[in-house]
Length: 113
Image (cartoon, one colour):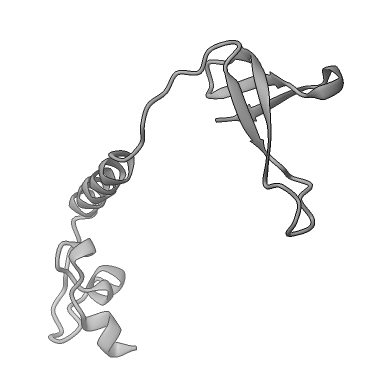
C-alpha cells in the first residue's frame, strides 16, 4: 500500500497520490500543498484528447423523414433469432438525437440514434 501511495502518476501531474491525499510527502516528513486546480485542468485536457481520438472515426449523418433504418431486436432470446429487424421508415427526427419510426400495425417507437 505504501508503494502505491509513493508512486508518481502522470494523471496527477507527476505527484504521488499519498502526498495529495495526506498533504505530506510520503518519503520525507515535509508538508505538501496540492494545486487541485492544475490537477483538474490537466485531467480535463486528457479527457478532451481521448474524446477527440474516439470521435475521429465517427461518420456524421443527419437522418431525415422517410429514411429507412434497422432496429435492434430486443426480444432476440434465441441465437437463431435475427439481431436486427426492419427496415422501418422514419416518421419524425427530434433535436435531441432521437427518431420516431413506424413499426408494423401502426406502432410508433422512439429511439436514440
